[in-house]
Image (tube, rainbow, N blue to C red; front, side):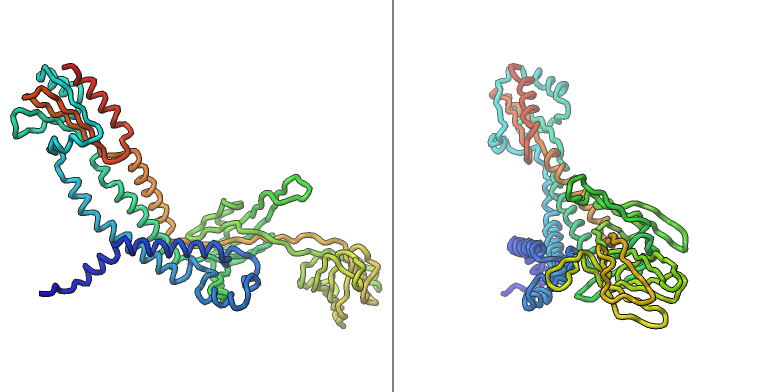
Length: 451
């Protein structure tokens, strides 16, 4: 008669199999290697399309390999591994409980003789030996023997250490659960701010689409600062952003963040990701008719009014090494657009080092490029990780479990007195890593010797 098919048992056996565990771990490891070798979207500041050929880009993008750790298939792998771990742990719990309840105090002598720590001593005064055990070897319990010619004493230490592997696996389970929770319900985005600039939104790029999400408050960059090394190249040492949280027009929180020191507010984490700069131009503008002089500052594509006049000036292109013709280098230059309010001129170049050279000067206005400065901006990484507390809890439990495995073990000591042969059998056994076992074993031998 054929046995009926049990789908639950079949499912259970499949997910606890070693073959499935090895397969899912291999896929996860291979996926992590791909995530290291392939540029991920939050990690690069240039378009990823420029890093790969069009065909390779389409293939990698089809499998979501540019945002691998948030892809549906990587989350599926984590979920399968979580199920595998849960089934394996749950399947082992009855074995742990059975082992914990097993009475090992009556283990047969012939079995105990195979222990690595075993010693036979000749005992001439059994009564004295029993007194020493009761007074100087505290914790030993007398175990009644069926054979009246034997006396047995037993001591167990760290019996709960049987569950040490379970603690480790529970920690890993919580870490995996937190990672999956964060992958599904968490997100990661960016925002760019200049000094004294405020925003209430940030951007998330998913599947080549940019989503704008609200912060739930206003985020202001009061100041962005850079510290440099004192070398000739002036390489950046550290960079900071003085941030302010504003809600309902009230300042809620102020904090300076830098790399590895984020700002935490509500469910969001704000990290110092990177920075950049655009040129900031200073112009001296003279109205030839009124002889009045104006000083204005503008960034690229930023329209600035010239004093009280209706005229406006817009820098539209910048060259850090402008060339006249093909060979003559004239240094930094900016292409500007002048709107006088009544007419619009064609764009013309202004040179910082050669202010008298103007490709198309305006008859009524004299404009000079006075200074070019770096207009720094800070790039902030904004993340929401709803499962982070589970990950921290799992990490703590995992570390605790590893500590218990190393330093908290199941030790058993036996003293069996054979009255018929006047021989005392001393045995010590440990579940693993018998660090202090031998010291206590030698102490028992010294006390029982020559009695």
